[in-house]
Amino acid sequence: MSEMTLKLSVWRQENAADAGKMVDYTLPGVSEHMSFLEMLDVLNEKIIAEGGDPIEFDNDCREGICGMCSLVINGIAHGPEKRTATCQLHMRHFKDGDHITIEPFRAEGFPVIRDLTVDRSSFDRIIAAGGYVSVNTGNAPDANAVPVSKEAADKAMDAAACIGCGACVAACPNASAALFVGAKISQYALQPQGDPERARRAQRMVDQMDAEGFGACSNHAECEAVCPKGISIMNIARMRREYLKAIIS
Amino acid sequence: MPKKEGDNRAPGQIPENERDYYLERRYPSFGNLVPRDVASRNAKYVCDEGRGVGDTKLAVYLDFADAIKRLGEDTIRDRYGNLFEMYQRITADDPYKVPMRIYPAVHYTMGGLWVDYNLMSTIPGLFVLGEANFSDHGANRLGASALMQGLADGYFVIPYTIGDYLASADLPKTSTEDAAFQTSENEIRDMTAKLLGIKGKKTVTEFHRELGMVMWDKVGMSRTKEGLEEAVGRIKELRKEFWENVRVPGNPSQLNKNLEFAGRVADFMELGELMARDALERNESCGGHFREEYQSAEGEAVRDDEQFTHVAAWEFTGAEQTPKRHTEALAFENVKLTQRSYK
Image (tube, rainbow over all chains, first blue to last red; front, side, top):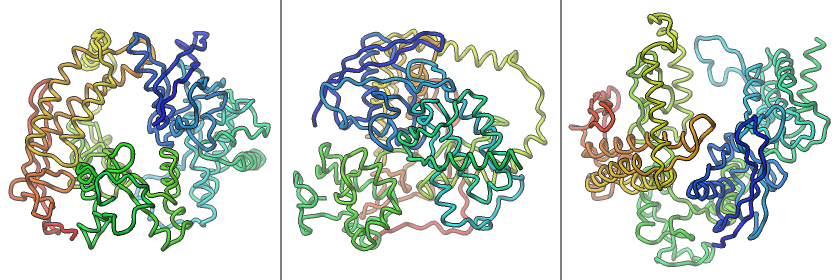
């Protein structure tokens, strides 16, 4: 089992009002089998033992499905591996002596709370604006009462694979949330259950996205390149179509 | 598994006649399709025998070679592609080519908060849905994921019962001036100040890990009376040490995940002891709740239906007080209780 020593430059920021700065740490004894977050756990234990305050970073499931982890690693949202969330990035992709920079997701729509933790509740408000299917109370519908074609189900499932982490925003030169919103609009627009509200949904979610301060999409496709779930920018095209249809109908 | 202890050859190098397909050997009619408690326990036993594989020796092989030969790699990819990908990321092994190394880990325990038939807890108006409540899973977790209970409670129960409660309950207006709120707020403030004020030598993570090891060794998938008694004692000591020697950094007025974590670990210390006490009280084995003293000659769980056809619910009687055990009979109208067998 090979162990390495890393030089880490980590963004430290007391709170939203603080200017923040990069702080350097040296961390020995990093196993290649650790995930990136486990490596940060080890660093935090060291910091606590030395009397400091640990680095705040978001995480939860650590198996790439919850969307809580983030981080810009060496300038890339979720780090160097394709289709990989930070929690699934393992240290074997780095080597002894590497210098790694770790920063938060930066965007107007994601204000820093502390260190590497940013406030992504703007995404929640976009979902609340229309990312649901309204149902009447009463009996739950029978399982196979509404047929969905395999093709539509597959495409909707691919869009629904979005875990809402916000890497798309962090990677975009415009800090646009178009990939996230496109995926969420698509997962409903492609299925009959989402059909009745599709126009209202597209309009409200896009309006909320703009209100939150996210920039416009200008087709850089950086979002698709960093997306840990490989969400396609086809979903952005679908969002535009849905939005246009909604505002001219 | 390799038949011989200390066989360090790569799995592909081990000839068929030097392999031990231990589940197929012990459970010929179910093979590796035995329920998860049986599969998990047997994986632990072969590793405890010293035959575990890989760097840690805490793993057994799960080989998809036959399934891939029978169904083709595409079919397997269609069914398990996401899981195989996760595995490959963690281990850097390609599970389509090399057998997976697996080992049981706790990610769920049966049981939860007591609720009534309408899913309301002992606190009026506090409903508990999904696997946070105790109601569906007993001997084993049914359906192997949280979906079953999440959907059942969310779709079929709560839409009816919560509406009825809201329509019929007397819900006077209240505010944060209420005495109960003030008491709670003060308790939280005191607890926070206490945690931050200890300034001890051990981190929250160290306590969490120590507690985890006790739970894993003594209150896990295979338990004994002695082990459980030891666990109760060990957790008591650990809890005492926690409140004297934990180091929680930072301050209470900013985001402080270590402080949140300390609060959770303090809870786990109480819950862990309760789980050990509950297991100690039940002199029988039932599915995943396996007491080594109560097993058949073939290693199957032996229940004592005379004594234990009930749910046990523990009442919190105050911090550091012994909780009180209540029982609720289990009545089976359409199913006859029998001894299961996977032979």
